[in-house]
Amino acid sequence: MAGVITYIKESFEELKNSVSWTPLPEAQRLTVIVAVFSIIFSLAIWGVDTVFSRAVKAYFEMIN
Image (tube, rainbow, N blue to C red; front, side):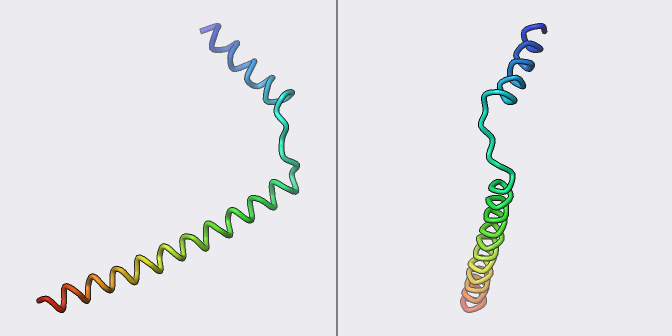
């Protein structure tokens, strides 16, 4: 158990002292970019899904 506690302490120490963090304004800008592209991508997938759903429905109505 002591090894796990030592590992966690050393991990936090490394995060504080050795990791170079992205400046806050850049992180905020990149977060907005990711959010916008996620929304655009989800709308595109929704649109393609809607088109294919209607096409499959029309196909099955046509063969019945």
